[in-house]
Length: 209
Image (cartoon, rainbow, N blue to C red; front, side):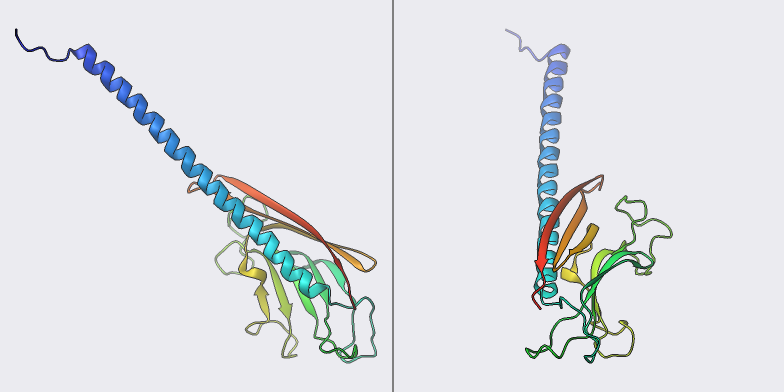
């Protein structure tokens, strides 16, 4: 009995089935990779807002409830300033005690939100790099003139809190001795960087001094 091979139709059907199986495999791999990337980005932005909030709370709660201009340096209660500089939508300004006497206080501390993303697309576009560092800056800077020379340009005087650069919005609001902080961070997901994930956290800080 002569040997019988595959017909052209059988080969075409087999190749079609294998193509479908391969396509389904590719789709499954891409979906899995997308899920992993989304999970990692979500974890990152949640850590970003949580860790930054903890830093702000720990220091801000020590600030003064009332001003006292007779002290040296003059004591200023916590204040919120809108648009303190170009590319800075908001900042909160305060001082903390140097010792337990209540008479010695630190130089002014600023938590300033720097946000260069004018069109909110999570990408650095022309004319957005106001600080000329080559990256899209979206961070909270802790600024303090430690050496008293009148600026915060020296090393260690303007430092991003937690090293995070993913903040989308920062809000401060004061009601009596309570300051409400809302932090929102987002990050683009995947190698194509086409969609963002977002995390928001709100906390209330009770001024202790």
